Length: 376
Ligand code: F0G
Image (tube, rainbow, N blue to C red; front, side, top):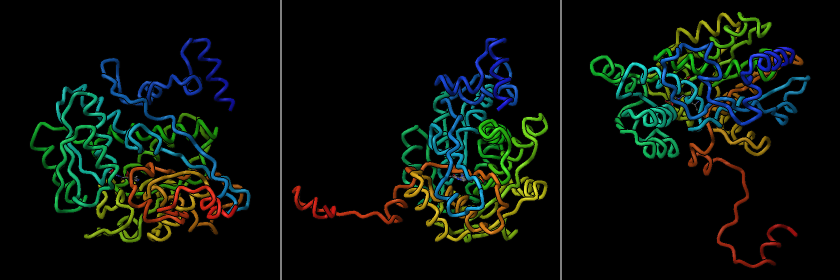
């Protein structure tokens, strides 16, 4: 909090609004302008933004009640970014840098969210956006986004890992820029979520719970927490708790999974490209990786919806499923942040199939009959 006050005093003296003031006044300019001193940009970098970032940190009271012991749990709800996922944090920077380098086309492999985000930012910058996706394994909302944002969609008979091999080769051979998380600018953009968490809490959390697919996001958070720690904006580093779906858990079992399977299609990845970085984050933070079953993911997904009012996508719910699975190990009075990486609207099929709602259909439009069903 003192940090925050100092920032406000400094900003009055310098007449530049603070990030806090920009959030409060709804003049948030997007994360490149908000965090420019922390990002590899210069005056010449054309900023391609949809005013991403500044997403809420929401207290999860129902989850706290389950855990007890004075533990505080928050969700970093990155599903509220402009295209509905954390990918926008990385994409604003990757596309801005591609534009600076006069690139005319970008390419990515994707389980859906990267393709939606790449398409939105690339088209906004006037570039072509090629997206290679595993045919039949991308949630409806994400596919709809890529189409509406004007991507050129290439659906392959193969999984994400194969798609990533293909786009890496194409980007090596042809003048198209790769915007998967092997592009270092992606991770720099994504690290800003860690900055925002420290600014909201006034300190780093004790645990960061995060789903892992290609493992870019956990690596980006670790970079962000370290940078703020070194700048003395926090006095500690969180333990990095990564979670994967059981049928798609190469980092948990430390082996490539040839045919990954999970309901959480976003993290259906068998050979994560950022695995080395993820293992470093785990070891240096004294963290830990764990698998959660699809059933545990769905239970957490439903719990978040009906007890917390938060609709996230199944992959995101893996962070809460994992936290609940580790319940006994949580130190008392710990502060925990679970990253909710994507919006629930991305995957309407999963929502319709997995809920405990009462749904009465084909009703007569009759007040008495309806009141009767309502139990009144
Ligand atoms: N959550 C969601 C909703 C995602 O879309 C992804 C990755 C992850 C978690 C995992 O993040 O890969 O950085 O470890 N989605 C990528 C995509 C693979 O193509 O949209 P990661």
